[in-house]
Image (tube, rainbow, N blue to C red; front, side):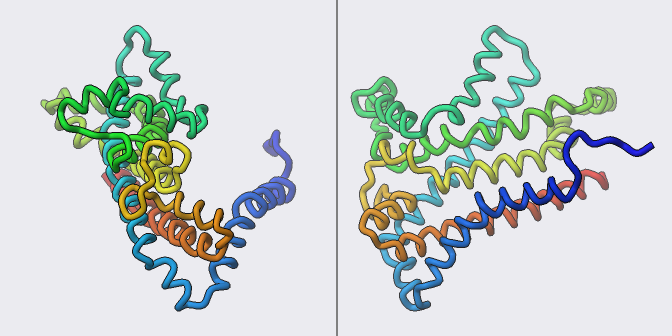
Amino acid sequence: MRRRNVLPGLPLSLGVTLFYVGLIVVLPLAALVIKAASLGPADYWQIISSPRAVASYRVTVLSALGATVFNLFFGLALAWVLTRYRFPGRRIVDAMVDLPFALPTAVAGIALTALFANNGWFGSILGEFGIKVAYTQLGIMIAMCFTSIPFVVRTVQPVLEDLDPALEEAAQSLGGSDWEIFRKVILPLLTPALMAGVSLSFARSLGEFGAIIFIAGNQPMSTEITALLIFIRLEEYDYQAAAAIASVLLITAFVMLAITNWLQARALRYTVKG
């Protein structure tokens, strides 16, 4: 008996999908590439390799890497706690994980600046130890962490929930310690999802704007992120320069996603063989 599908047939579904991808994804990216390509090679290189642009790349990438490393460990720990333990207020904590998705990033930036300013709740305490957060690169990393950590939690959490308890019980019966069970049994199964979450977290951090501009200080050569530099070039009506700098982030994101997909495929093959 032929299986009945609720959704329309392949031609209509494929057409709607391609129309959506072309209109929402391909068309804006093509416009960006065409605008950047209108520059000659010498002009393009001069724009993307200018000292101010290179400084913004450094600030953005290093901050995104720092935020991603933090999200890797804290996001995994948070997903583990929400999955494996039951405690009062668990549902509230679980709902708050999605808060960065619902909260406008500009509001998040203002709130983080108020908290970590020198006279803020957290900033005043950290200031006693000589740690300054607002208007520094540390503040940029905190804003990136806030907006990107849900990607790690929400990609790892379903995998943890679906893990077969029999695997851990079998490892315990063979005398494995808690660390050995986590490292040799659980972590290999989590690796593909963890890589996906980390890559999404890094990509979101690279392109974050609203949550950062309030807490960063936006000092050229010091705390100016690439997204802000693109915005400044747009305000100056220098659309070609904005497209050229944006293309660097676009290429970086594509390269990062390609490497992540390759690592995920390798990890998945290793897990299947194991």
